[in-house]
Length: 415
Ligand code: GDP
Picture: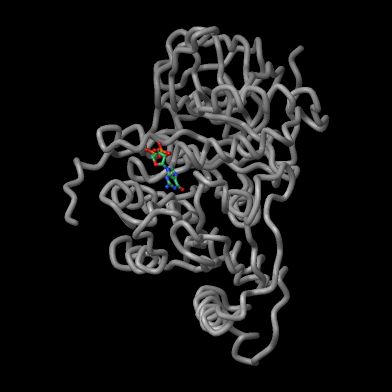
């Protein structure tokens, strides 16, 4: 049965995961889907049965992201993971996916650090001021060096890393992280557990000095980016965890810095804190400025659409995919208004009317048919005939063209 998706937009995260090939994007995504699968839910109803199927499937063959947008749930937040192609040949496609996501997680190989494709995608994300977090992965590998990777973020990406965690132990003995916001240790000594998978401990005595030094650096970097923190910092006042988290969020949304976390996706260490951070620090569709488009007949005439269900419908088709069961699917980001199954919309780029067939929200292990979906959401639509990637779909009586992307010349990497 088709359902209406009415979600509090504040609790939606449209994110991409970007990385150089082999850094662990797939593994990290699979771990995210694994953990969020455990608490999978439809609307407001927790689905106990789905959890069981999920666990069985996971054990049988692992979970692979197969969709251009996969929806999952984490602590009452809906996370839509938008697939961002990592390969440089797909530069145009990367650009397009960067437009439909609101925030991103960049995954780094703890040994290789910042690699050429990271630089390419990072630069493209700069163009759209996409708020980003960093996850330094593979800390279990021989030669992994978290601090070198952080230095490379400064040197090669010209970014401002805000280090939120320090690794405890290294390589085969990588055990956990010091959480510099809560000044505590999160450790993974045993098996993967289904709920919170880490233990909270005191910071190891041997790391007390290092933790104090990095806490200071953390506060300084945050103060540089945020006036409220600066004021308190100069007064020498203490901060609550909530104040710090709010400030990290403000500074990340303003694209002034990039929170950095670490772990090893492969060994399930660090992925849950990463999910928590996605919810805490990356933007909701409401944090993003209204989308700018232009009049169908006059390119100079700017039209701005706000992420509200009360606005006329507008959406961008950002990917066409062939689904083995459903056939041609058009992935659409709804920017304003409501998209309803069975309704007629206009493709404002070619002037053709399109009838919206079935609408789906795609999950890693199932798809869900939806009657209507509001602004800020990403769905797959069946039945579109004349719509290509990059086309705008809109309300026939309130037309707009959303996309005015310029593609950069091929980027030549300088290591
Ligand atoms: P992608 O190309 O970025 O999607 O990378 P994958 O997720 O496919 O990972 C590339 C390889 O690195 C695979 O063989 C993974 O099993 C491995 N890998 C991923 N994460 C980790 C990690 O945390 N530690 C180690 N040692 N290997 C990892």
